Length: 217
Ligand SMILES: C[S@@+](CC[C@H](N)C(=O)[O-])C[C@H]1O[C@@H](n2cnc3c(N)ncnc32)[C@H](O)[C@@H]1O
Image (cartoon, rainbow, N blue to C red):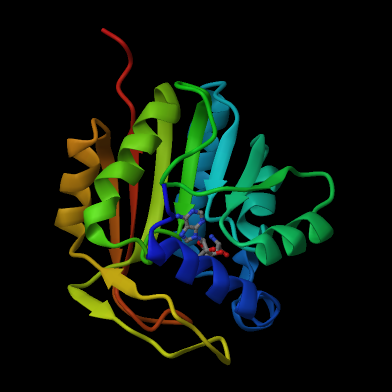
């Protein structure tokens, strides 16, 4: 089956911007304290539950994957963009990074202790989100955790430039309640939410959700 055009646009665009992305986007150490706290809380929950591994889906250059690994989590990264995966492998040779799409994960059912989707779902058209979240549910072990973080809003953006280069991807910002509804329709239970106004280095409203795949009855 032919690849959906939005995936081709995301892959080509992030291949183009990869090197400048690393220069322009601050690393996890410079993130706002509340986002870092959500990452730390997620890592602690996964670790203390003895869950592994954690897949960082849409890992980009792997800095957040490495941040999680530094918090004691067994983490690996997956990204659509071969250039991003190349940068991640080069920067973190001890971690595993593979090309792939969160629309169709090459992973077994119940294989993951956790999933991180960190600013990586906003290029997915809303009609594709049920398929993506179904993949999250399928690949998470019962009791496994999802941490999702991204921009929120109610608009479709068609930027022509990103990180100093021409890009062809689009961005879809959804209200947080709609995102929660989509996760819950996929069978995940949302247990915590953080909404933040624009501030610091993030110029849009943004949010984090913690969700869990229910244990088997
Ligand atoms: C804004 S960057 C965020 C990267 C990383 N999570 C971070 O915070 O540094 C978005 C990344 O998501 C990836 N991405 C978008 N859609 C994807 C998909 N369907 N499957 C895998 N990766 C995807 C892009 O290639 C890009 O590297």
